[in-house]
Image (cartoon, rainbow, N blue to C red; front, side, top):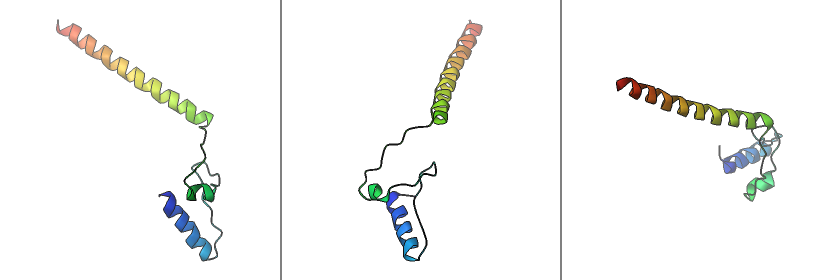
Length: 79
């Protein structure tokens, strides 16, 4: 859902007397004024997200090295 549609949805719900707000993916409330001016604040990744990022990079490197090793063994077996 885009920022504009989120703002419209919140405005619609408030017009119907609901208490509405916008949350980010961590459940923290988002400043609506920054969304209207397209100046959203920079968020910092959590320790868990950093760890997952490192694991993804290491897993990709291990898969690449493993693939190259398997190709080398296959080529060596042919000759």
